[in-house]
Length: 113
Image 1 (tube, helix red, strand yellow):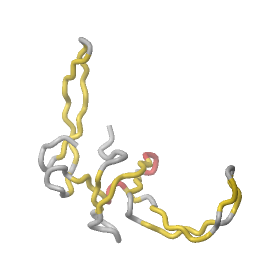
Image 2 (cartoon, rainbow, N blue to C red):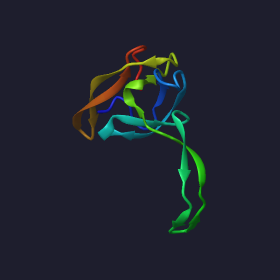
Image 3 (cartoon, rainbow, N blue to C red):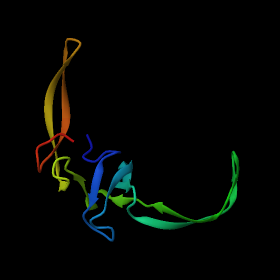
């Protein structure tokens, strides 16, 4: 189970965007990077071309670039500050069967994420 998932609220703890918060848009597991909304915005020069639905206009776009997962922390749901993530195992009974489930927990407050 991953410590940071798509949709999590995170805060940047290192780099030029230190202190900014945003929602995780994408997780790139192979390179240990994530794309965060509003963080690490870079300008991209796009060439005009054709797509399946018509022509694409060229120009300069601003897009979010990936940031390394070690440079962010998950925001604690209770204190609204950065926190480390731990795991707790629970026994869940459904339809007469018992399953073991891992739940992500904020180390700062102990609340479920």
